[in-house]
Length: 407
Image (cartoon, rainbow, N blue to C red; front, side):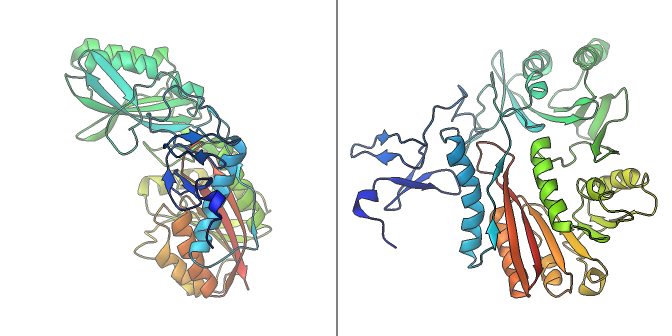
């Protein structure tokens, strides 16, 4: 359908990568729905265009959509999911309103470090380049993470070589902040003591240095854990963790809704047990099989599952190379899966041939979810409901939970 003539210069929607799109199909970076492209190339801002909250936007690269009002951003998150499904020629009985995590709730981040002369720059990579905007404020990071940026700048300033680079991985765990540093290593007793003092002074949960031989623990007063439900689980270095506790709760609420009263559940791509351990006690006697390819994650999940004897059954299994087949899948009341961004095409093909009554699919990539959803629909499933979730506030990264039932 062609846009009306008076809509040709009007921004009608936001595309997947964050550009506004006019009625005649032109892409306009930094715009919002309701803005109008002026003849000279300027932009007349509409009611959905707001002032960015951060001085680093848009150069920083951590956010792409701070110019959108809250309502416009929530609509964008929902539209990403609905648009991906439409692109595959399928629909859902219901695409729910999006849940968006509040500012300053991101509990994990990977930052880059670069020495330029006497200055140490710490920040995200600028979109489309390797340039770093030195971070002096951040409206997405949880305050306990951002509070470490300035002292880490001092630490790297004392130890990072000329024109050298490093990385900082931060995660908020049960004991505080877990920190992994690369690009620096203590030289001698004085620098080692300085790093230990840094960890002690800032009450870190753990401090690790990542070198040629992999991460080495320098400081860990107590074993580092992350809790799912009421079960603490060992937290391996750089283990996957949902970006915000708020977003995890939104995903979990939708998973619970989809699983209902199921007694025997398969959790595929189970990770550390984010969902398996959280929902295990929802139904008396519920048993959960949990498949995961990362050995460190399986061992951690097993340790948490041992607190529920005979209820959690982890398996070290690469579901890309060896997906569960219908004969195995048909043993379960319901299937839960949470694959990486590439989706789970091979496993979904087996699911489509199974007799599983319901499937709950958690995804961090609407296009790969829509591709897999089409396979399930073609296999006889109905997509009942999709819940979009925007954990990465002001970014183009969208997550969701889709619930399928046998048609």
